Image (tube, rainbow, N blue to C red; front, side, top):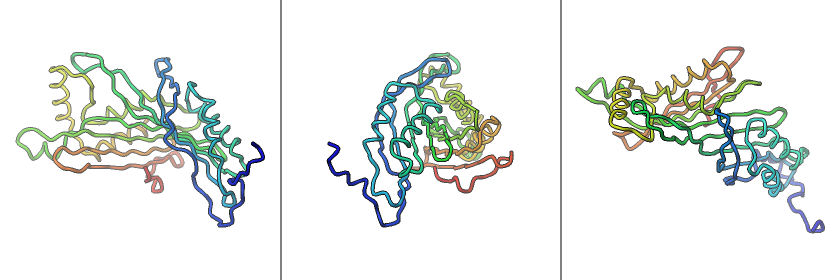
Length: 278
């Protein structure tokens, strides 16, 4: 088989670097450690890429899967992702590929109790581990968290009531070196910044609570984005973060959205004008 021609090894003369080339939407079994000390099996959706130098015609696509298969039913963490990317870069060939990148997304279930009746149910959250390896390793954690949002303007101008909507906060954080944050803690932080938390199971006493809680804690999408940002900054363990809040409006056919991108610069949090991409 080694005698078969390998076209992707040919040189290219067009002078165009490929920023990312690889494989996407791979369904793959991995384990994730919980804050409680358990390991849970997740079905992850994985994207793997390498950047290709301008004089290289193509990348060997099978090598992405060869590296990934070594991690079947193994634990995913920021440390193991670093190892995976190191192996991937070496296997693709550092002479051809300058950096490698992975985004590994999975549903993560957290058990919650309703606020009054204390009935137990689970909430699912879309989470991602994101890693990039070039001269150094960089790691991001991403969560998408559902809360409710009660409109302050509607409450102010109405004789009674206020319109409410589902609010999705997508938060991407980059921890400082040697720092760590659990998925559970990041999700709870975001949940506490909405008008009220969302629960899968509510009895009548709980429904009364969440209705009144949201009404008394009305927030625009801008309020939620800023509250999440302040809470993230107060953690004192991050170097940068991005926040997107999208309210699925109940009185409009469109969503209301708000974006924040911040980075730590000389010990001071500043707006990241280059980080607006989400």
